[in-house]
Image (cartoon, helix red, strand yellow):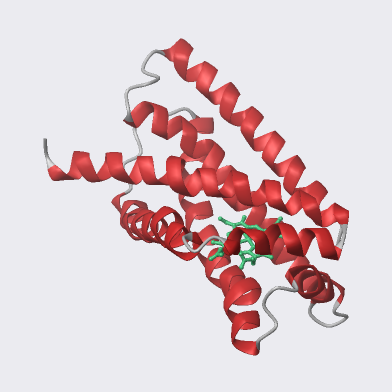
Length: 205
Ligand code: HEM
């Protein structure tokens, strides 16, 4: 098997299985914002009660994410759009690449803002207060809200549309009918996750 083919497959797998599942779980956790500070902070913090939490994050999220992002950046420049693509497929092809770069920048800013910054300042743990005061800040609140909206939209689009390419790369959807079905499924995933994340954010808007 040539190494390019293998790398493409691992790239596709890391995007859906560890990183994609983390996104779904992470967005589900954000629904607890509607239950107020105490319950939300408890839900987020209780994950870290396990002595394996940090290892699980490094193995399941950070290493696959690093691999997926580095190879993703290389693929953006590879630029192998098929002449047979329709206008819509062309659009999705480019949006997948643009959203990938955007989500990478969002994740760096978000992990700094929600995790490393508070951790260095010794305030990590009061996530609800940190998020809601950031959103309410008269000077930077609007920018923070815009970054969250675009970051969530980009991440959900990148994951949902990635399900299509995953099914093609792994030979799961090869016929036009099965590709149509996968496209409908990924559209549904996009709508459900976007609605859920925006509903979660409405609690601290
Ligand atoms: C509804 C929007 C979101 C909210 C309110 C939110 C909130 C938070 C909070 C409070 C933390 C810090 C908690 C902790 O240390 O575990 C966090 C961490 C994190 N978030 Fe988000 N997040 C959102 C969307 C996203 C998206 C779209 C991604 C992209 C994949 C993402 C990726 C991460 C990562 C990688 C961490 C660090 C996890 C860790 O190392 O513990 N988040 N988020």
